[in-house]
Figure 1 (cartoon, rainbow, N blue to C red):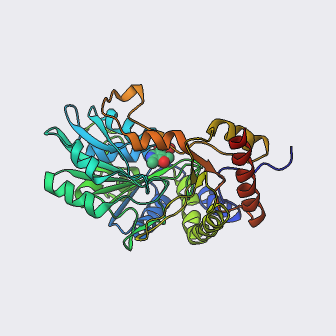
Figure 2 (cartoon, rainbow, N blue to C red):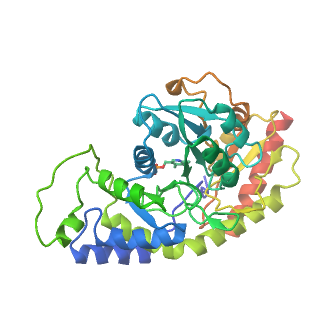
Figure 3 (tube, helix red, strand yellow):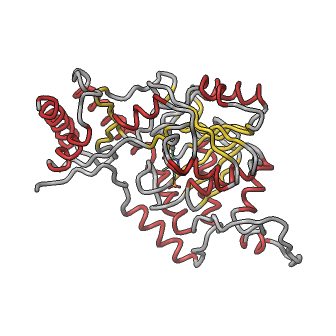
Length: 378
Ligand SMILES: *Cc1c(COP(=O)(O)O)cnc(C)c1O
């Protein structure tokens, strides 16, 4: 087979290697060190928040968000249904119950009316998800959260560089969480961040992410040595300083990566817009999409499995979109989320990353059209 066009691909190189070499020379490789601090300051500025905490991944950042906001056994948290397992799992980790709310058919973000309908006397908060990076309806969600005195979390795992009504992703809820996994827009292989404007939540999360004690950097700055005591169960959710160095270089690249993916999304849009069996993704006019994935919706008559198989045979990687959570046996939910279930069955993600050439984008689009036409004709 000739060249394979990758679904996702990190953009890393000399700048990241140089940043790693600097950390090696500094002697501080562990987490929560001086390089993490520098990254956290820059990331908070980019997210438009007062605080950022670098974490091992987005799942641990979500766990910290729920712990610091006070979710626990007996509580319910309303969660956007169409999402990665981390979102619902993080609620279960606290002993609370996720109650999944259906999504909008156009943006694939949680439907504020469905959130409102899912609220019960046990509900303590809401987790909205920026679907493939496109932000949810935060003004409407904020109003619902305030009316019912609930917390609001933004799962911004895919949303680095996105905006909503001119405000950056990350600044749209009480706490937002990011992922720096290799499939996301900026990456250190693995990693994440917890961001917030609230001093109390930031301080609590910082303590919980280092076993519930003061971090080594803080200890090193204290001139006396107070006797520490353990008052709360914490975790090791620290990002290493090696990974933080990679993230600093990735932040420098972010504008260029976003521009490349926006060009690709626009080109896919032109090449696929007139096909009767393929619907291209909708971008709401009041938000900027960071294009973590490019996901098309196939007509219900199209055999998605056959399309995926044929695309892969022709060297174009692809996958489904993300997961309908409410149908997963782990979560034990009876209320249906028909829009999410439909997207779960019909979505197809095709290659999207900043390294795609114009020729590769054309190849993906023409191959997709060919394969869908051939499948539909059978
Ligand atoms: C990828 C992803 C996560 C999980 O991120 P990790 O860093 O792997 O924990 C959580 N939520 C959403 C919406 C994601 O896409």
